[in-house]
Length: 144
Figure 1 (tube, rainbow, N blue to C red):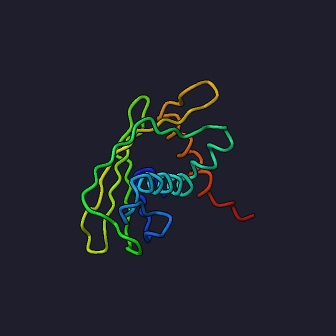
Figure 2: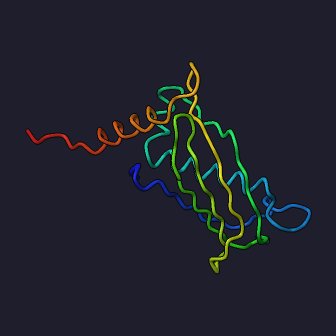
Figure 3: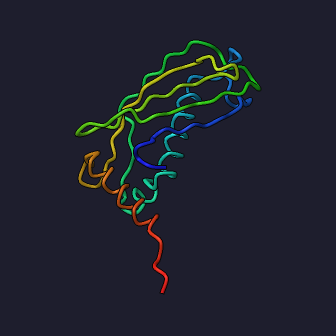
């Protein structure tokens, strides 16, 4: 997954441990799915490996979600996440949950940093590390 196409989609089904006393998917579970979506993106881009090697940690500093419809037990859903942009400190992401008919169930935004032992790693440094990793991983050994 290249940096110019930073979108990721997870599909799921509402399980018994996802529902609350109202019989629909709990708001906390929506946040967990957003986390899982980010982790999947980290793995696909190579960022997870870089973070492990450099002992960097991803930290969500802000997350807001608006809920429009319920997801009931056994219902399928899709969560699309896109990296909207970054600035000198933060990465900004958008999350959109849809039901099988394509209707928006919930939408949210999050803001995150990557933190190292000496503080926040500037996004440009993170992006450069991912680009270098991707370049190395796509280079083929020369035939001798």
